[in-house]
Length: 69
Image (spheres, helix red, strand yellow):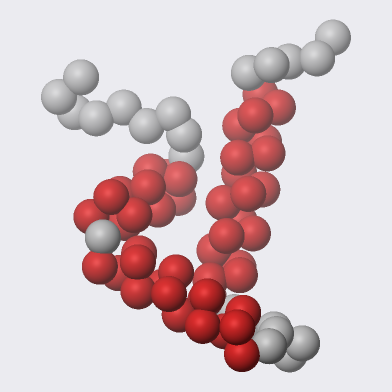
């Protein structure tokens, strides 16, 4: 039987892993546009509280409960 709870979490982890890899590593076949998208993504994470919170929540694992819940 398929689990509708664990599968999205698995794919979410894979998606996060790919997002971090593509944001932090340069690929030899990447063109100038892809490099600028990468820099924009890094700038967004570094300059946005919402983006840095999403990164933090995903890096420690989801779901993420806050202390004030």
